[in-house]
Image (cartoon, rainbow over all chains, first blue to last red; front, side, top):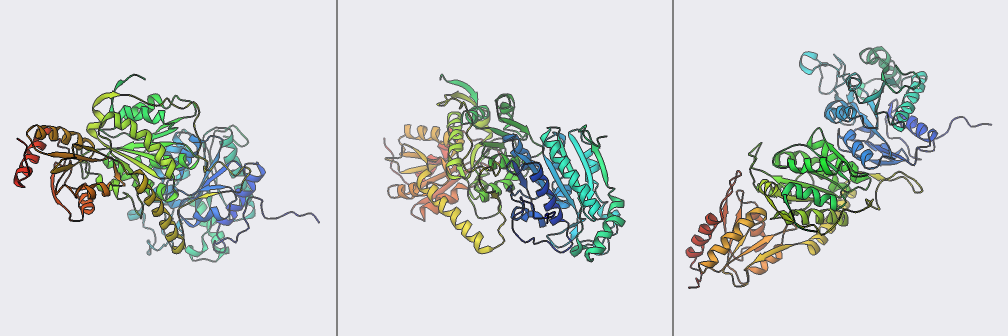
Length: 251
Length: 358
C-alpha cells in the first residue's frame, strides 16, 4: 500500500502542546512540508518570538533563533544581511507583528529585506490568556475587552497586511486561512511562494494566516473554524493583497 | 602605520573595521553621529559587510542580535537615551551568550538630558543594564588612542567569553581629535564564529533561545553565566595608575574624568602634595582588589566622577571601610577643569593633615 500521508521530515518527533483546534500545528506542518519540498531544510533559520508559538523550535527541525517580542523582522534582517545564503523566516503572532513589532515589520518590508514573515492572526494574545490583540474584532470579547472591543476607545482591528502592502519594498503579501482543507492547501501555496520570493531576491514577503483559537475564543474547534469564515474573513478578506514577483498569479 | 588625527567616534569606527566588524547597525543620536557616519562611508563598501541605519535603537540592537546568531562580528553604538532602548536586546544577547560590541558615547541625563559629555550611565553599564541577572564587560577609555585600542579589544573579549561588551565613552571623547595609531590591518577575510547558526547542514538542527520554562533549568543557566563572569573578573580586570607609590591620597576616576584628574594630580604634585591616580579601565569587572590593596598604605581616597557618585559605590564596596572616601562630582554634562579638581584635592589634602613635601 502506498503511504500518502506521514510526518514531514522537518517536523521533530514531538507532541504539539497546542490546544485542540488551534491553527499553529497546521501551519507548522505546512512550513515543514514546504521547506522539505524546496530542499531548504539545511539553509533555513526560523525566528519565533514570544507567543504560543515561541515553542516552534521544539517542532520544526531547522535552525531556530528566538527573538524578543516584536523584534523578529529586525533579527531576521541581521541574520540575512550577515549571512545571505540563509533562508530566513519569522513566525509571528498578531500582537507581535502588528502591535509591538509594527515598526520593525514595516521598516524591514520597506528596505525590501529578503525575508519571509509568517503572520498568525488569531485576533487575541493567546499565550498570555486571551487579551485584546490589535486584530481583535469590533465588539469581540476578550479578557481586556470584557464588554466587547469598543472601537471608540480601543481602536479598530489593524489590517497589517494592507499596511505592509503599501510599502514599496514588500514584494508579496497574501492573506490566507487554515480553517478548511481547501484553505489549508491555499495556505501551503502561499507559504511556498513567500519562500520563492526570498530565493528570487525580490523583497519582503508576508503571509497572514487567519488561525482559529478555540480556547481563547471560548468556542468548540468546529465553531471556531466557522467563525473564521463568518466573522474574521469579513474584516480581513482573504486573497493576494500584493504581488510584484511576476510569478504565477502576480498582479 | 603612521599616526593619523581622528575624532574619537571615527577612531572607534576604524578600529572596529580593523577588528573584523562585519555588521554595524545604528541610529542617529548626538554626540556619537560621527561613528554611524564613518561606518556608513567605510563599512558599507567592504565586501561581505553590512551597514544599516535602523528605524530605532531597539531594531539596531536586535539586528546585532541576528548578525551575532549567524557568527558575524557585529556592533551598534548610541548615546545615553538610545542605550536605554537597547537594554532589552543586551539582556537577550547576554542570555543567549552571544558576543556583541555596544558603544555608549554617554551624555547628560536623566531623560533627554543634554548632549554634553557625562558619566551618568555608570550604574546602567556596570549592573547589567536590562532585566535579569547578568553582566556585560564594560571598558572605559580615556583617550582617542584608547578608544581605538579598547574597541578592538572589545571584539576579542566578546568572542572569547561569548558576552556583550560595552565601550563606555562620553561625548567629549567622541568629539575630540587626537593622533591615533593602529596596530592591526583589517582582516582579508571575515571570520565566522564556530558556534554560529548557519543552517542544519551536516549536523542536527540547533536552537538559540532564552525562554526556559523550568525554573531549575534557568537557575543552572544563571549559575553557568556567573561562573563565566567570575572567570572574566579573575582574568580581564584592568586598570592604570599614576604616581601612587608614595601617595597619601589617591584619586579614583575613569574615562575622561581620569584625564582631567591626571592634570590635577600633576598640579598638586608640583605643590608638594603626595597624590596619585587610580584609573579603572574595566568598570566591570571592577578592579576591587587593587583598590582594597592600596588601602594598606593609603587611608584617603577621593572619587571624582562626572555624575552624582556612581563608581563611588564600587570604591566603597571594594574598601569595605578600610579608608576614608570623599567624593566630588559634576553632573549634567558640565566638564570641570583640572585646576578645579586640583583645588578640591588640595582642600581635602590639607583638611586631613596629610604630609606636604616642601
